[in-house]
Image 1 (cartoon, rainbow, N blue to C red):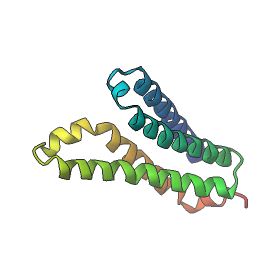
Image 2 (cartoon, helix red, strand yellow):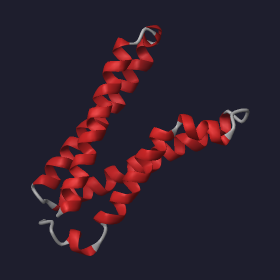
Image 3 (cartoon, helix red, strand yellow):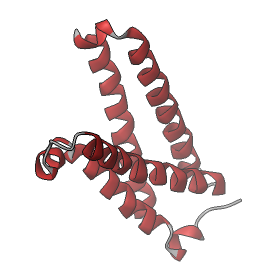
Image 4 (cartoon, one colour):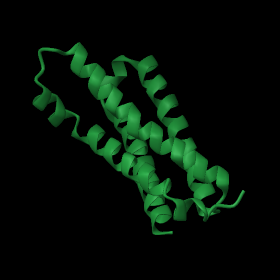
Length: 132
């Protein structure tokens, strides 16, 4: 049961981060030159925030679909930042791995926390808490 509440807290943390990045994009002068790119980021991050809210509601209600959505959300949050890290590392070959890792510490943190929740949510005692 504690894992569910910890995962809910994690989702809230990510949602707050997505809202913060939305605010930062609209307050930053650098993004004013790229309104169509900013709109695409807003759309994708908005969908992710909505998805996390729906998964959180399912977890609170202890519904099976909430469990499935939270597994999928943690999978996305675990894989996407690592793929971005790898692709940027490949494309910017002049950047050292250590410097890139320092710049991407937040992404790596998100991946590691989500991988942890994937492991904890897949354990049998947690699975049996959810209704159909």
